[in-house]
Amino acid sequence: MINLFEVEETNKMIEEEQLDVRTITLGISLLDCMDSDPGRLNERIYNKILTLGKDLVKTGEDISKDYGIPIVNKRVSVTPVSIVGSAACRTPEDFVSIARTLDRAAKDIGINFLGGYSAIVNKGMTKAERLLIESIPQAMKETELVCSSVNVGSTKTGINMDAVRLLGNIIKETAELTKDADSIGCAKLVVFCNAPDDNPFMAGAFHGVTEGDAVINVGVSGPGVVRHALTMVRGESFEVLCETIKKTAFKITRVGQLVAQEASRRLGIPFGIIDLSLAPTPAVGDSVADILTEMGLEMAGAPGTTAALAILNDQVKKGGIMASSYVGGLSGAFIPVSEDQGMIDAAKAGALTLEKLEAMTCVCSVGLDMIAIPGNTSAATISGIIADEAAIGMINQKTTAVRVIPVIGKGVGESAVFGGLLGHAPIMQVNGFSCEGFINRKGRIPAPIHSFKN
Image: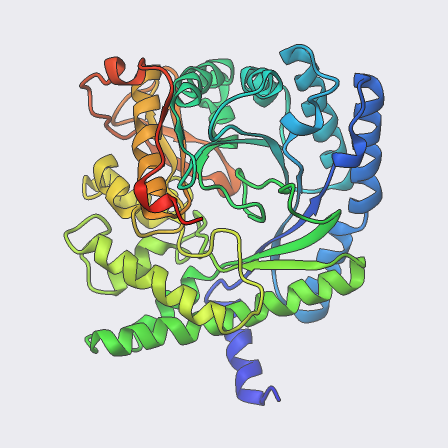
């Protein structure tokens, strides 16, 4: 039974501490849309997304109105397009035509983003997967709402370094084609290791082939709620600190569970998972970095930051997993620089470097996220950053990702502006020593010894 105190507490979280449900994401399988004719394929894709997604935005708005819970985004994820288009697409332009169809469908149903312009190339690339990857720069230029992801490795298979090398060039080309908007195309492209099939967050969301025909996944948020709770226990022991985060995460997740179940009921689509990730925004007070400073750091990036983030990530999962039977996606704490005002301030102050962010990714939810780097950074260096992050994920059996934005025409000390939830970011210094000889080796990095568990 929910008592009056709990109702008042939740209202306060929403009104004063910026609690929200970050996204309701409708996953849609496009496997039954496959066709050898590009025209029919695009028609089937468009029709299926409109049929299943036409009521998504209205349902989210109605739930928000009925329960007083802000639902920031309504999104769609689809089956990796490299699979869906494998029979019909013979050129990169064929895949770009699918991206345009996805963008048109997304706009027509009124969602914020659509994910799944993706390829899974852990061990090797099919012809279709290579064509999709080669099409990404043009697809990101020509679309507004379509997001792309490529999974280049896993703990079970190792890292496909041929794909890593290729993606360094793809990211540079995407940056060049969208340079008039601070290379924003790269903000819609993420490279994964151990990508989950049920992630509701962009840009990495796709509807995995192990999923059903359609599913509702919900991503909760609430950095401001956690930070406010920690103001009540300043100077207390680590035990009290951890208990406070855990209990707060439980309350946040219960709100997400309510929204997920209600969206599932109203849309007549099965509920999939709750993603527990604390997702910040550029708004003041909605920052993961501010949680870290409330834990006792002068600024994010100071010694102790990785330990503090490890505590936060672990306790969020412990609290959240008690609040929902179906937890999945990424689940933890995001550290995107451009989308977190505290991270932006720390980077500008020199407290937070690319190397420190990489260390933090060993214990956080994802990886190097929404980081602006100089536009003259080489493709090989970008590939090296991807390889480092993928290695962290592979060895530690966790999801890691890279979403870096080489901002063409800008250098360290300048800023890139992306707008909306994508925010703005200072251009961060990148290690100038070359890794080209390493990246140009062909093949893949073998899976670690602990991957062999059959």
